[in-house]
Length: 382
Image 1 (cartoon, one colour):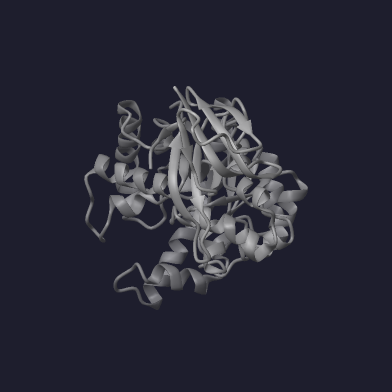
Image 2 (spheres, helix red, strand yellow; image 1 turned 90 degrees about the vertical axis):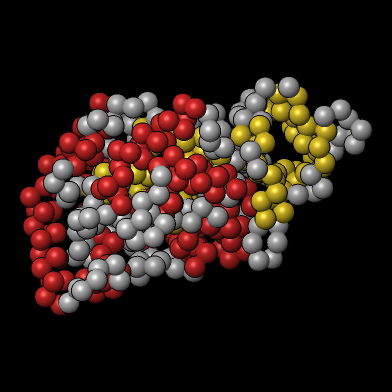
């Protein structure tokens, strides 16, 4: 069925059509018009000059976790939690979402350990039953120092929707938590009854786990990524040695580098650099690391991820225009074309003939861009 979106400001990959129209046929973009169509054209919907963007592509979000455990110790029914997460992503303009499920956790008891396999099954069930508004794929985040990593990963790795792996190490004293005091500040809020002695004991235990498991686990995950042809990301790269290791491992994506030096090295080695959209919206990192806007000013930012706030993705893209001086097409590419290309999704991420009609209508506002409508393969989902 044909559908026409008329009188819109079309944000293309390399330019803006100030007043144009888009034709959709059988879920694909079939024509791009440089001028508005006559208002009486059949199946024509007037977008009143709003921005029309490609649907957002989110390659790393753990937003699901807050729906799985809305209060500490309270587990929500699995499929309803996933459906709510999906609706929140769609309302934020995200039409392709990589659910970033952590395989392992250094924190002992956690929602990540308790729900990994049930969340995986629920997302898969939702896909099979067609209950989602967005397209869902899996990003498996491999916690290298977790003792049971490989036995948890093996049953999941062969699923066709697993399209991204990342290797991460949240051991205190390096990478994101190279400043032990930052680690203490962040995790101390989560732990009831922590004192200096229990904190130091926990640090020692986690550092011992890293020494025992991280090296051999990383080798195994790298080999699994190669065997299955899955892109591999590094996580929280901090210094040049981390980037050098990543390149040797075949990593193509550097997620959330913590320093400008690491981001610069990633660029020099051809890695896609991902930064958090919340970092942009808040004006800096919650853990004291490099600001995403600093990397943007130096041309070292390729991809934004909403991480734990789906609505931050679109907001941050518009802030790159307002605060970093980027063009709107360049900024929108960080949340659409660039992530799609990084994970091998060549059928989406741009407004172009022949690509999926994953689209969103946005009304710019001084405070925050306002999502008006969202289409997934031409079907309105919001």
